[in-house]
Length: 393
Image (cartoon, rainbow, N blue to C red; front, side, top):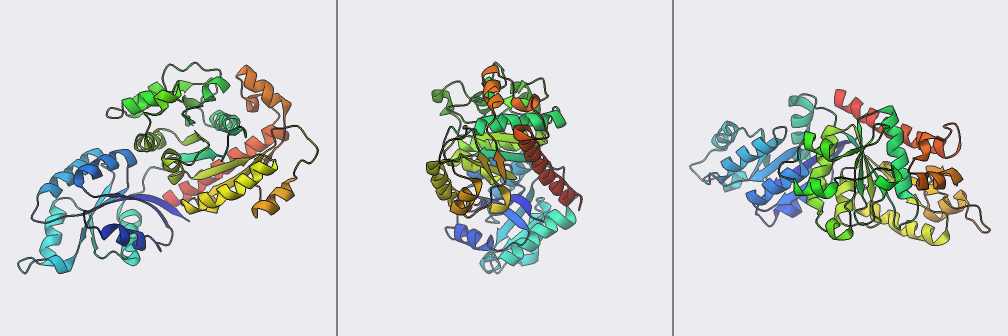
């Protein structure tokens, strides 16, 4: 089974990014999300935002700044592992490799990587740190993103209904983040009046913890927590990808399920969400222009590192039947991919939008719209169950 991990590489050597890229090419079951920092100060900021599992850093043994950096990482990320990147050929005649190792161990560094980096050594390091020596970690929350290449396809409607269905099964353990920052309407669909939103969490980033995050959420009677979108587009501009990644990582520690309703654009913020999403529902309508757009959009997802095994294609038939309507087989032929879920047109969904009452709370679960939402939620739970099995192993 695939194992996800985030690694922060720190070093000013201009060759390091190329080494990292090459080393990440063949790591077996490990799915690695890498971040690069050229200075210790930059690395501390990235570490706070991205919450990496492992920090690998270069150091000049004679420079004591790395000791301060190691202490900062330990303070801000007590669960992260530390490893030193070193090149044995750069040791002076007065230094022995064993002496360097002992010195680093005394500074609470857990492991070492020789340069130039290699896939085999990096994989062995990950196996040692996260399979052999470290105790099983608490299972992080499962992140589900809903995404499309255009608006109006029903993405927010499905995000809300999927999150509500999960919340009825797991009250108090589901967070819906309205990351459609400029056009977010999830609060309206839930008939909630936002007194706080994502922007409050971003502005409080230095003191944001699990307790404060819960306080900033709106709570729906079904047990769902919502972090609403900003009130307007001007406020939305303050939410950057680093702050959002930090918020998302905190959400994973607090809630078992985090559902993200994204903006229909692949920008740096959306990529931050996709990077750590366990499941990505890709939505489209059954019209020819939309299908053509989807055929161009899917390769983009592949190119930014969202493999097909984490994607689910959703055909949302949110229009009544009309002449010339494309069939699901027509669409599958155009995409060269199987459609995982086809959501039928349901008049009651439109009524529920006006009432602010998610349709899944009122619909039959054995057929139609309700049945499809139930199956999507089952899929999400299955992914989390597989991850829980990995953690126990």
